[in-house]
Length: 234
Image (tube, rainbow, N blue to C red; front, side, top):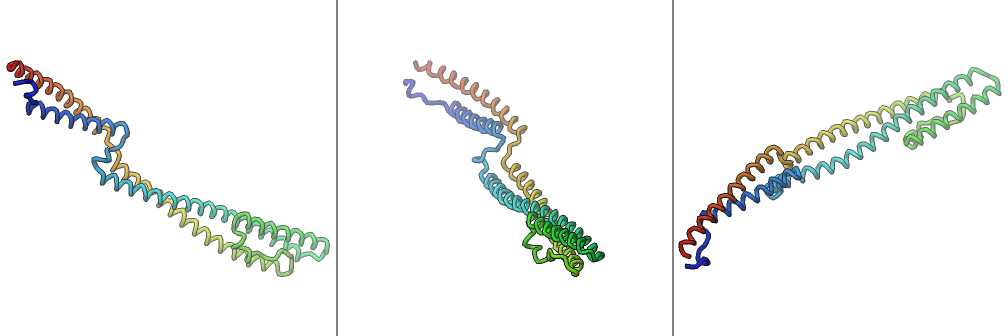
């Protein structure tokens, strides 16, 4: 009988299969330790679910950006409403003073001041992005006997519009907080499905390394036994 007629014993073959399996497992464990993630091949369902969660997070991020822009615009608008109201209050004081004098020179000065204040209020509204929404509420910039009552009506309407805008901005802030919470929940869910337990994988790697070393020793023993058998047929 020649050496070529001698095949691996079943024990040696089993040891090689076990060693290959252990080596593959060790490779996966070391890869998980290196990347911090589980092996997607071993659990594709979990990775698919995690991908769906990350996709939802991306959509929420876009919504959050839109909300942030809305809140910024709302803050600017509120500053505009406050500034416009303050200027109109000053104009109302000028209108009241004008009614208490009959001096033409003083009245001309009051008229110029009044026009300047109303024009400033209109420009401030435009700068704050609320020019179009308050245009119909602004009083004429020409001082008349009715200017005081016109200003009162304007400021009342402005306060109502400002309160509505503040309510809308508060709603956006609540939605933004909710969106942040949802993103955190989705991120935690995706992490739980894909991130590896470093302690567990470290223990697995150590165990697999020990099994690998024992497997190599076992194959060596089987090989020596086979060589001893072959010598009998030499």
